[in-house]
Amino acid sequence: MPLNQMLALSEGEGGLFDFNATLPLMAIQFILLTTVLTFIFYKPIGNLLEEREAYINNNLSEASAKLVEADALCKQYEEQLKAAKINAQSLISEAEAEAKKLVNIELDAQKDIALMQLESRIDDLSQLIKEKLLGAEAAPDSSLGFNPDIFETNVVNLAILVGGVFYLGSNALSESLTERQQRILGAIQESEE
Image 1 (tube, rainbow, N blue to C red):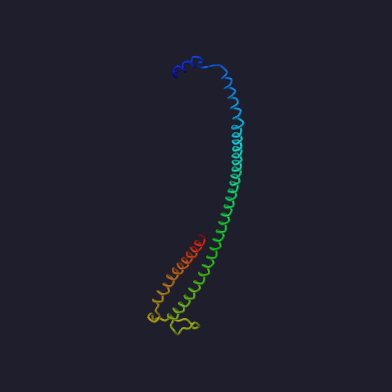
Image 2: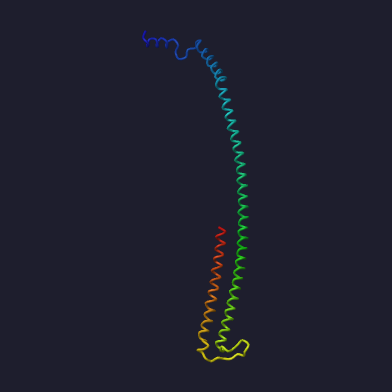
């Protein structure tokens, strides 16, 4: 029999819904399959998924606890760093103040020494001028006299010399002291860095 005839006969008997003994048998098979799959397949997979979810939740809670702890340690570290910076700044400012005080003391001492040397030179020059003006025979304990010979006393040369010493000496001395102060302050700043 051809295939078309067999299909036509089978369709004619049952139709779309054929309620015979096959339907309850299929329902029982479906229920048994569902029950067997539930115990053999779905429950172990469900347990495995629950264990995995519990493991993930546990890891997340531990990670969040460690993150909170790390944040606390970071804040503590930042506070310690701030305190160390403040302490370092105060030490630096104290050292700067002490160094400036020492530099000023040293500069004042050198200035005093230079002024004493300058006064000594001025005294020597004034004695020389007095001897030239009054003559070589005038002694410090003798009475004062006047030597009218301009060429012998070199009044003009001595006046220029004394004026030059005052003019150039004071500028050179102040420049020398200022330069030394700048070098010392520069050395202090380099040591700070």
